[in-house]
Length: 326
Image 1 (cartoon, rainbow, N blue to C red):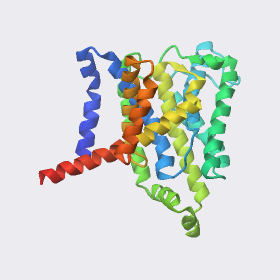
Image 2 (cartoon, helix red, strand yellow):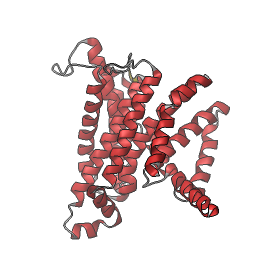
Image 3 (cartoon, rainbow, N blue to C red):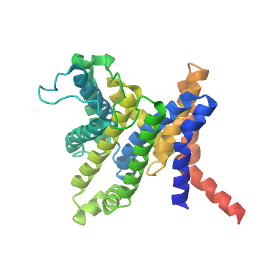
Image 4 (cartoon, helix red, strand yellow):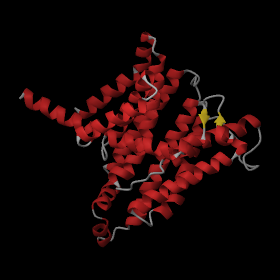
């Protein structure tokens, strides 16, 4: 039944461009694309936060790096000047996405190797400090727009597809999000995921069993950074823009809120949290300029009232419905 439900959900999401076109609500398609992209970023954070117990407050750094990889490669493609004199630019998505994932993973390896030697509040502050250092580094890079960011004039190309079409881009993002979700589910249910969960529950006991906890945590941190880099590269393609704001600490806070809102340590939770957060942000902002106050109050009620996030609330309501039907 779960497989059938997932298939129905994916089919419904795939049909969304036809629905928005029929209703004349093109903005809804753009909102859905943003939700899928932020869902990938939030799910990558949830992997180390919910399953590994690592509270990273600098996750937006990898999100921004993914976006800048797309922007920098496009800039050198447009100018015809190779990066560092040897690396040619490109506007091909089959190249930019893997490179963005790889570069984000390398940064995650460097940051994680140092940050994971600490724990608790120190880990939170070090990840935040690294993210802010990268933020100010990219603000100072005048060759790539400085604080104004990089304009990407065209969405990266995919062979045989018209990537200028918003519906086509949405389907590409949806396909990547589904593959990412299935890959993450496989990873969490693997022996590697079991070790990561075991480290979260009792790191000393796992070390006593001969498990190299540091190596496992670093591998999880790198995989999580790669997921955020993928989301950042997709966002740069969607917005056709990359700026230092993508790696600001407030963006890390937004990702954290999405995870907590949807449900920490759940598979669907981050996607649900991203959806609710972005829809609240969009609709409340259209009503009042004081929308952050209303958003904060709603988030407070949801987080305190659902006891485990939106996914936990849906599970309880489903259980009540089954109980009432018996």
